[in-house]
Length: 277
Picture 1 (tube, helix red, strand yellow):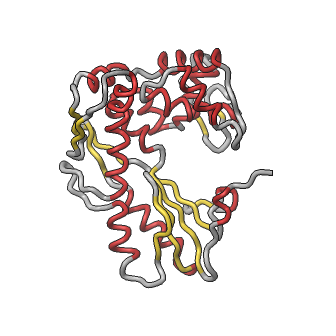
Picture 2 (cartoon, one colour):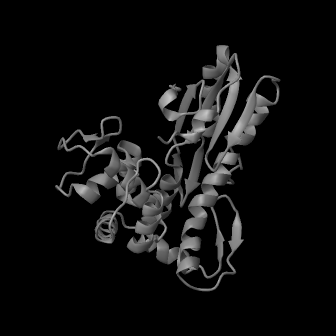
Picture 3 (cartoon, helix red, strand yellow):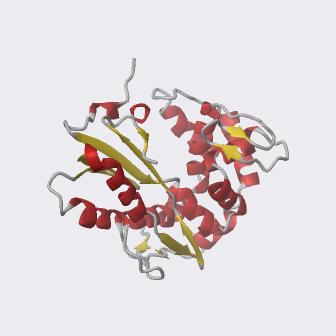
């Protein structure tokens, strides 16, 4: 029996853990960089991983409106399996950044010894790849990125010069750079030059952690953090933290706000925590 390693992290007596993150953050940035209509619809009105699942598995002509909790479309009533949504999520990350079906298959199968224990064939991966690109049009954005030679500057003003040898790996790095960099800067608290609104992890620390001896940030990653807080006000502080993460961003003259997800509980395990809201 394999256990979720995160379940070994337990709040001290009198404390609770609050996990807060930006929800599907890179997909939001990709959608606006590519000005991709179907991605924007899924992110604003539905669930993008379910929406992708509809494109991969149910080409019924329905434009789908998915309920994430039941994995069901409210319009045509089809239902995704958890495995199908998982593969759709993996496909979103792979195909957004130019990964081909062969490499996507190898990466998914390399993780097949871990939950949810799924592997796919090259034929399945190739079919998913074709269906994904028939549904989402990102190649115009790729062409724009690859036409920028070796220098890319994000909407946050961060510039990177790519020194790698020309080839597929360099192309994928260039495509992935702005979404990944933008999410990291947005989450950490960099101030967007067009929005000028403070927030992110810097403000969470400054406003909610530093003034209190019994408030802690115990973990952070690319787009999420774990707070250790007193039980009596953990939920309220967690909601304040989420509010500091939710701030506008502007990409290609369009403003949007990446939503947040929050969990609260004694143990850092998704099955043992409840929704913050």
